[in-house]
Length: 395
Image (cartoon, rainbow, N blue to C red; front, side, top):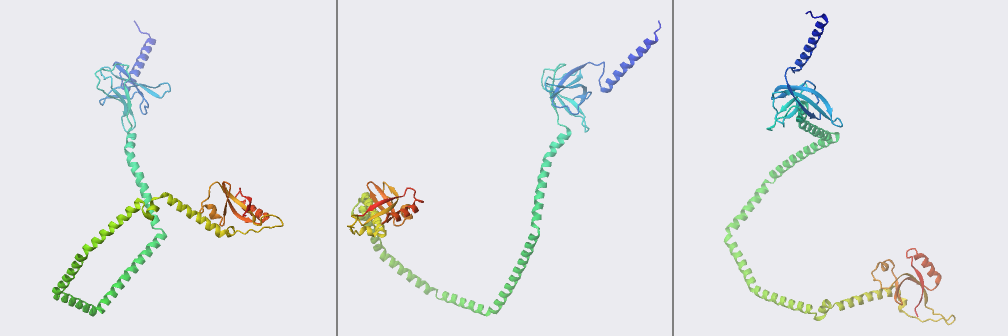
């Protein structure tokens, strides 16, 4: 039976397609006649990895990458599908690591076997990891050197700035002046040493005479050493005699003084005598303090207002009124008596105190007529808002 021409062309085309497909897979490293196991790996990044990239196990290629596609809801992970020779048994905890294959940046999937006794089956997803690239490793190792170099450059820059600051015009001038001062100091020292040498040469005779006198004195001391020892012994004996003669009497006198002092202190503590009463009687102390304060008030009042203590009764028969009637300007009133050393007394010398019923009135000044008192009130009301005028009858 003859084969038709169209059938021959069809067979030839099919053979060509088969050879083409077989050739492409052969170039990729896969074979149409070998069975493969398929595994998956999920990665954050597959930079440098591509379809047909090799799958390496212990340095030998056992498969290739079949497909690469995104996965996850946000397409933030990459799913890599790769094939492995059917006869290769991989532990279930085998690590599928993407690592560099060469310096050009090509990547492969390296299978790092685990220690599990259970083996993975075709279709399983293996543990995944991305090894740092060569450039990343180099950068990581060079990072400390880079940081040290940056710190070194910063230090060098600071040193250069300091050196530049040291050798500015002002510093150069100061250094020049310093060297000039050192030079003058050395010259002065040289001159002083010359003067000292001249002085020693000129006074050599006197120095020799002084040394001879010193030598003579030491010779006399050496020759009269025994007499000097006797004199020192006599002085020591005299001082010992004086010390022994008066020591006992001195101790007795001191003991008597201490006993007397102790007796006096005991009497004072018991309140005996005037000093004891003053120190132990609190009421007496407070009374004396009150008397002193009242006397101080009386003296101050007498100093500034002597007319209050000279009572003259002058009566105007025509008006029928007391002639000593006055108008006083009150700047402060209090239920309690103010201290004579209070701020109000210090600020107003001559301040008068008048007790009216149960209050103490403090009058800054008094006048025979109302108008001067009113003018004084207008003046002090600026400082004492509660000031007012009161009528005073001394008689």
